[in-house]
Image (cartoon, rainbow, N blue to C red):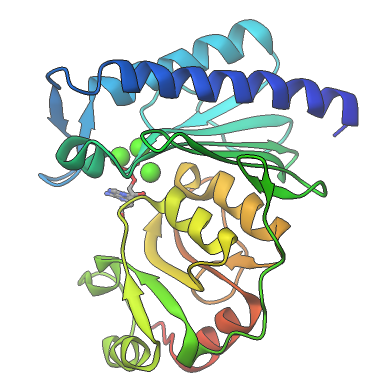
Length: 267
Ligand code: 2AM
Ligand code: CA
Ligand code: CA
Ligand code: CA
């Protein structure tokens, strides 16, 4: 992507992310309409939809040639990552948004022909913005994030792992996962994939495993983690697919290598 064009897109995107966050904070104490999607724990609110609509409207009027992939269905039906693609999760961590009124994020990743160029993860209630332009450093607000310490071993790691590994349809060796949980120093689960990626990029969490994420959950996070020298793949080590759901595995390269080699057994 041309440097001037990228700076231009970055500037608009940053302004929209911050403004969308402000709009959410403005109404955080007002009553919510909570609807159920695929199952009783899969929630969506009018703020998820309103925030997504805010982005799609801005993008379509400012960059009519760009494509949009977004969770709540106001984007485009994409079959490829050709061209400029905005991948948007208007509220990542909706359950936290509903139950806690915190610990959720706006996630925006911008890709050019499949290459991640710009990423934003905005912790709305903390007003903390993680942002990255590929090759120009990853930042938490104004502070540049250092490269990950690839010397951290599994014994000294904090691993993010959510309950998706336990699903009956997930063909993963549960015994191995138990061994892994015992091996690491500690486990965590925050309930917002985007904030979990941000924690990995910040180096305060060493690895992240989820057996089910969609492109909008990881689009920005992947760019952020790459920029600090980490890596993100599917759980078997193969590249992520941006068109469908994925198993996802992210972290410093030492930890991901060791986990994939010794602890992930997929059938
Ligand atoms: P969401 O809040 O945008 O839906 C929770 O562990 C993380 O998984 C959140 O990032 C959440 O994103 C995502 N998530 C929630 N329900 C999901 C589902 N049914 N399938 C895939 N990801 C889901
Ligand atoms: Ca959702
Ligand atoms: Ca999400
Ligand atoms: Ca969401």
